[in-house]
Image (tube, rainbow, N blue to C red; front, side):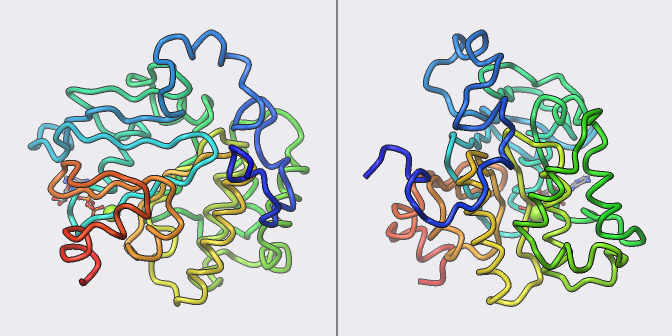
Length: 275
Ligand SMILES: Nc1ncnc2c1ncn2[C@@H]1O[C@H](COP(=O)(O)OP(=O)(O)O)[C@@H](O)[C@H]1O
Ligand SMILES: [Mg+2]
């Protein structure tokens, strides 16, 4: 077995969706400068984040979530645990009073969401993640908003990953099925050629078959070298594909381990997986 689990032949059709200047396969041009600060640290880390919304109470309490190169990290936990809040904190949508967010060794705690996109973050929020009145293709074009170069190759790669989107490219995104809309949302985020992809409940409201299909596509994206940080309500299935997993409860890290470890953990099973 190769050291990199994604280097085997598990069906990667297209590596090129990964940013040639980022991702796992080729170190970014800033990597040498930045990786000095915290050697061995995950590619993306929200480290001991404490904070909440506006002047409200803290929702996160020293909460840590992270994604390693070449890996899928999954965040699970009960409703209201702060999973979406933790993702928003990593993306810069709320202030963290304590803790830090680092991307490729660089402290980005004080950058705006848009600046984080420029640094290589792709984020698919839990709600309102597509423009329903625009066509599928217009959604993808909007996704490329930070790019000044030709993004047609990236669009072709997104259509390779999600062929149904090519078929429906001229339809209003709002007319698509739930699973197809989620593909639009993920595709839109990929249009910036992110170095890391954050997904908040990408399989919300879809059937088990569509969920499996989406997971397969997400695994495929991870294999192109883009680390994935993903919130999932389908805890068991998510842990099965997770290299790393976090259980959050009331804004705190309750359990952390590999997906396998948490699936085998008696307490996790009893509290979060229904036995
Ligand atoms: N925009 C907001 N303003 C104030 N409080 C919020 C906001 N969004 C979520 N919360 C609160 O933060 C807590 C965690 O919510 P959330 O992160 O959405 O949980 P999860 O994603 O794990 O279901 C909840 O108590 C929720 O009411
Ligand atoms: Mg949520």
